[in-house]
Image (cartoon, rainbow, N blue to C red; front, side, top):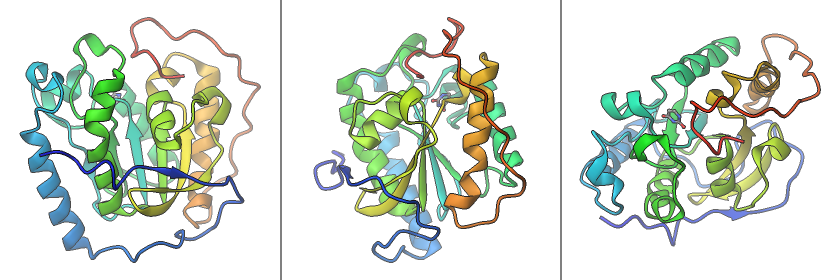
Length: 246
Ligand code: URA
């Protein structure tokens, strides 16, 4: 079924000081309603043929985690392993994501993880604009249902889509901004994509430092002082990783 992207498209508002509690918005639904809403939406995605990727995917990757999560991570698109298993971030980048979560005392059962695209682009090529347009409504509806405090975008594609701006992740990472997504007031928090950080130690240190700010954005005490990032030396990623991550 067609996703209602018209009524759920993002609106970007002023960058401001980060509030320490849930941004003012409609009250979130009870946990059971959110879980049921996500299951119904997942069933739509299972049978979705809105873009040609539906013909080449092994299975769609809807997203996974806590339906009432305070933080929603949004990656780019499923890769080979995700396409095989139907679960987001199960490859090397996912292992790093797990480590980063553990570093702030969270695990996958605390958060929700989704992607811009629900189907794998062949050969891990970049998502194309028509594919993003076909799929984005599902992401906005996930945001509306989960009603997170923080939407943490991983890499360029998620950041550009959800900020509505062309600025790349190298420029905007670690800078939260309050905005409306899926009809919800949220803090948008751009982060480097873990797949990019896997191969670039300087980028990993920046990602760790940005991750260390998450508890504060969620209104919690950080577990430890964030590490000081070194000046970011922009390096080319290894060719094996997905492109468009910066
Ligand atoms: N990279 C992504 O962006 N998403 C995944 O699910 C896996 C790797």
